[in-house]
Image 1 (cartoon, one colour):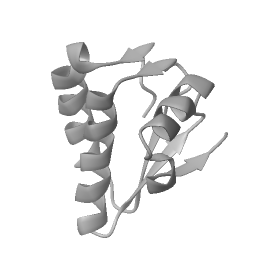
Image 2 (image 1 turned 90 degrees about the horizontal axis):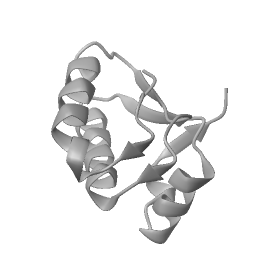
Image 3 (image 1 turned 180 degrees about the vertical axis):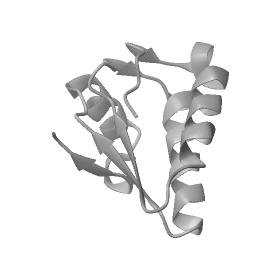
Amino acid sequence: MKLEWDTLSVQIADELKEKLLHFSEKIEEIMKLDLSNVNKIDLCAIQLLMSLKKGLDEVGSRLLLLNCTIGVMDALTLCGCLELFEYEDE
């Protein structure tokens, strides 16, 4: 699933949550999120990703973040969350 937003923030959190939940219902093993369009991410969106990952872990699935921009990686590093996720470039 490719996220279309430039900024993942509290302002779009409800819409993002609905899309992620809907998409995650179809996942059996790996949920891939393409973040190549995302240049900024706030703590609210990071918490949403962490919650999604936890839910997927509980049912034996994985969350894979694809094509993360420097802005996303910097935000995850600053929050101390970088090591919580799996990453891949396509």
